[in-house]
Image (cartoon, rainbow, N blue to C red; front, side):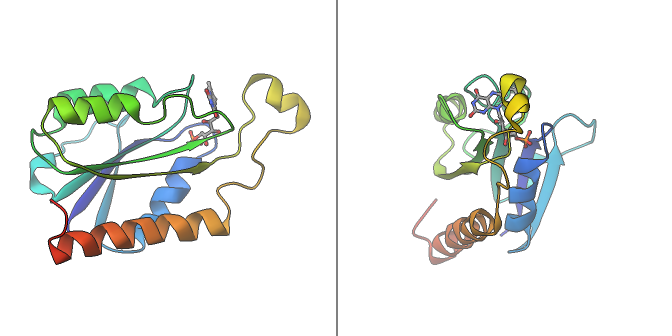
Length: 155
Ligand SMILES: Cc1cc2nc3c(=O)[nH]c(=O)nc-3n(C[C@H](O)[C@H](O)[C@H](O)COP(=O)(O)O)c2cc1C
């Protein structure tokens, strides 16, 4: 299965660590949505969209990128990391996928080290995350997603 995951990961690279773990499981291209590059998302079997949670939601750059480039009907999944309060999580992406007729295959999230604002004063929260267990769960999530598609039990 050929997959691309379009992501934004700036605060501590937490989300990118999760995506690197998933990419160990198969053919996955990681696309940083802030770099200008020619991408043909039509060529992939399925697409992931990933972000740290910023202000209780997926980062706007990822939502805007998907709004512009997500091909109609393409199967999608979502990945995010958060310090402690995920807020609406991937809700904006789910809504967008529905608008574009894209089946949602699943969603993975875990905590990510957070030193934003006042948390810096206490050395941050969710220290050490994503940890080895988070990364193993991420690999498992992607493995299961691939095998469900291979078995034809998912779009
Ligand atoms: C500007 C800013 C806003 C944030 N807002 C939230 C938030 O609303 N809820 C939360 O749980 N974490 C919040 N965080 C923490 C990040 O979601 C968390 O550290 C995440 O793992 C960052 O992912 P990244 O390192 O891949 O960018 C925020 C961090 C920053 C820098």
